[in-house]
Image (cartoon, rainbow, N blue to C red):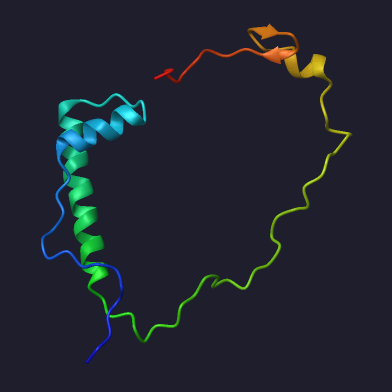
Length: 112
């Protein structure tokens, strides 16, 4: 008997509703039209269908991998480059609004 992936397999293809798309758009603060809602819902449904197909694949004979390139330490060391560092005055010079040495920006998140 073949062993299959432990990921649950859905027998019915998942369908993304326009209501869910509206909710996601609201959470992301992205305005979308009714036509875009339908197009995005169809696109998400297609993507979920592909994921459902992938869940059905037998991966029992596939060796798990977590890193396939062999690259290590590809990021530079995190450090302060004092030759490129701005003074506070330079950093605030082009800011539209400042308060007590900080840049002030408009609030984008609700307090709910």
